[in-house]
Image 1: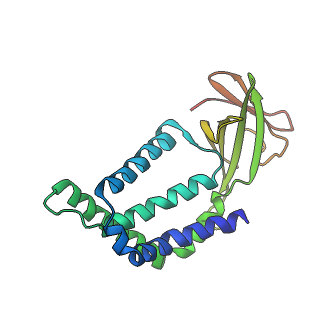
Image 2 (image 1 turned 45 degrees about the vertical axis):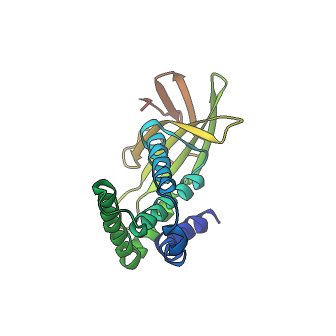
Image 3 (image 1 turned 135 degrees about the vertical axis):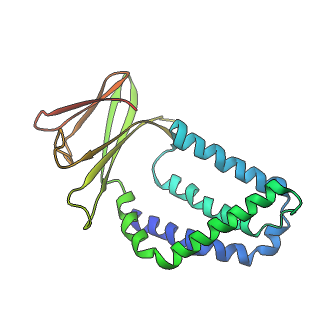
Length: 214
């Protein structure tokens, strides 16, 4: 169900948003410029929080939804009647139009690739642990396929908050299954924070892997 929801977002982002923007062109063009710029500012701030600071909404699906709105924003910018004499704003419109064209090409020719890659955006294993009364969650993503001789496991660890719908990424560990320091995919894997600077993985066979937090 989760996988189907992600695929639905992919389809709707690439095809549904442009169609909606064309349908509601009259109302979109009537929006005050401050609303458009406010939306741009919101996405810029959110991207900084997610990619630079590591703060995001809890879980992956909420982020997928917000990231899909980026394409809606691009479609709106490509259509919105900015005043051409404002060079900066006009440049944004031209750039948005170029991005819109690229996305349209991806929608036409790249659906097969998107379907394949989307399947690797779903966490395959969840781990929960505590340290110093703080709660953490690690989600494991398996990357690979027919074109790869081995899979890559990506462990993303977050601090979660009981009464807040946000999470803070403390670490991202990427390991190839060939020569891995512990048994990847072990459902009994133990994850701990021995100190404030390191994270430790220990499989059911007792093999440990200590690394510095990113």
